[in-house]
Amino acid sequence: MSGTAVVRIEALHKSFGPLKVLKGIDLEIGQGEVVGIIGPSGSGKSTLLRTVNRLEEPTSGRIFVHGEEITRPDTDIDKVRGKVGMVFQSFNLFPHMSVVENVAVALRKIRKLPREQADAIARRRLDEVGLLAKAEARPAGLSGGQQQRVAIARALAMEPELMLFDEATSALDPELVKGVLTIMSGLAKGGMTMMVVTHEMGFAREVCDRVVFMDAGQVVEQGPPAQIFGSPSSPRLRDFLAQVL
Amino acid sequence: MDSVLQTFFDVHLMASVFPDLIRIGLVNTLTLAGGATAIGLVVGMALALAALSRRVWLRWPARVYVDIFRGLPIILTIFLLGQGLPLAGVHPFGTNSYPYGIVALGLVTGSYISEIFRSGIQAVAPGQLEAARALGMPYLTAMRLVVVPQGVRNVLPALTNQFIGTIKDSSLVYLLGFAEGQRELYRIGQDVAQRTGNMSSLVAAGLMYLVITVPLTHLVNLLDRRLKNGRPKTAAPQAGDGPGPDARPTPMEVTSA
Ligand SMILES: Nc1ncnc2c1ncn2[C@@H]1O[C@H](COP(=O)(O)OP(=O)(O)OP(=O)(O)O)[C@@H](O)[C@H]1O
Ligand SMILES: [Mg+2]
Image (cartoon, rainbow over all chains, first blue to last red; front, side, top):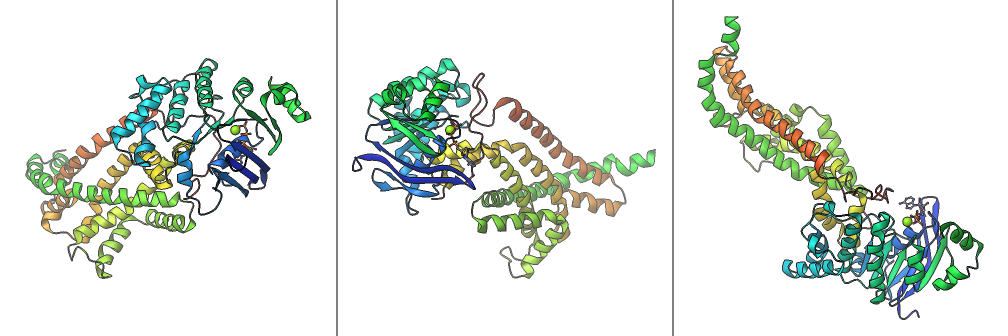
């Protein structure tokens, strides 16, 4: 497995000052695997996800992406991030750019593609999330669900080998959640390797290949959704499921 | 009553100074203030970015610079630099004191502008920098393309205010001693007032300042209103989207590369 792993996390610790948020995480994610990460608020799910593209610096431990150790000081993290897409709870679209510019900007400024080519790719991605018609609009003119779909298109434009989702639907009105989840399911079926922090247990159960339950900075239990939701073995997971289901 | 009118509002005297006020004074005032503001914008942006850096050796000098230039009377700085630079052997502009006046005023203005930029950049949601960096943009690229444009937009009113201030402060650099054709509005008004013993030329100069500053003041108000009502500061919270999540503070500079 370790030869084909897209992500390998070894003995990962992370503290914010005195607060120990991650306490020894070991995790491996294979090619095309969709891993759901669930757990109570404050358990360290976002922090774990954000160490994978080093938006958070690990305190100790190692992380490999496609075999390359990205936690080394000499890693070109910008290059790694170009291959790791991230979708945030709060969308974080760039409000001073049009929708198509949001999607094209990294292609132009980092991949150095000419404008026409970057725009063509951006429009294709927007079409895939059903928002080609909004290409010239400003993000502020879009609903939350539409903004999140643009954010997904923006990440996909870089042709990532791995996608990180941090509660992509938590900030959305209930009626807008489905559209975003549908796109995420489509990506999963298309073979994208994904780490998905989510409160959507339905998504975790139906789309994820594996579900990881975190509590207090540790992976308490993991396995196929059927096992995690059908026969949870640890009391903490049982408590958690009793609360959210 | 007549003597008051005569002393301050002698229409003939005013009419006679207006040509010089416009041809020489206005041009010089705008050159001094415009040049100083141009320098101030560059210096201010560099200082603001340094002040926001994670690196102590960048933050510290920026802090000290701003504290010193904001803490000194502008007249002292203008003399200190305006006369001092050439004396110290830094005289790229020869012995003409005009450009040194612009530089001195620009360096002071830069300290004020840096604080304006800094607050504007800090008001940009941290998620903006994170999203840009997560796409693979290096820190400075992310700042240039994503954070700074939004930060500058936030502070356009404050920058315009600063420009008004610089226009007024530009009346101080005449103390460095300028040639006839380099005199700005105040100096021209004052020269005539001294010669004639009548204030009308200063009133005329004052009117010239107001012609520039009053419209700018209204522009500030307009920009302010636009900023408050129109465009939201970050990814617009849509009706019903709930409050912006992820509001936890994050370091400005995520992972140097
Ligand atoms: N930059 C930071 N500085 C200080 N503390 C932080 C920081 N980021 C996270 N924390 C703390 O670390 C802990 C874990 O946070 P994290 O966001 O990873 O949890 P989470 O599992 O994603 O929770 P949620 O479901 O609410 O999103 C929390 O106690 C949080 O307050
Ligand atoms: Mg979280």
